[in-house]
Length: 231
Image (cartoon, rainbow, N blue to C red):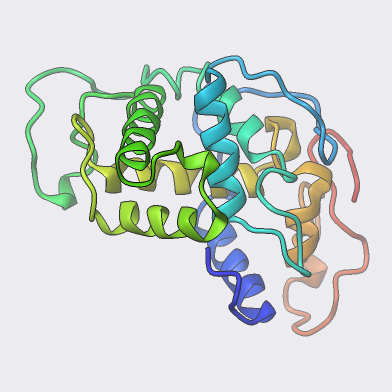
């Protein structure tokens, strides 16, 4: 979120996050869409107008634009998240969601009674209410610098929403943001394969094993999506 970092740090951060989040298999029942183009419009199918403004503002701060690449909005991340909310994953249909719901140790995993789509609904409402109380405006209307501060407070658990821990909401938001940035474009994000291009990922090529052990050698064939789209 801090745009003052040296440019190589952004590339390193994105490479690490790509390796730990979205390059793994997508969850069962994910939405698929035609590959988006940079800046394309999207009418949300799940989020309302206020929620959509929050999501776009937050994604633009979690992955900000700089000389190395576009921001999360240009990558289609909000579109990716919106499409995922209308899937078995978004509705929590593959999770065990029966009572009792109690606060347990972190090593037991997710303990809340809400599927992802409800985490977003309650989390965005809580974030906007907090911003209205403390800054007199919704999150999307705040300055980028203040948005960074609010997101950092959520991440650290320094604010509490009425029925959802802010840190849990931030974790959901960040995880889905990175997935949207690095998943195959057929899922709605990674517009123009620009995240894969930035980190040098070859994508869905059938075979690139000849290049695995050639350290320091740039992969010459470029990246390709499952649909056949190339950068």
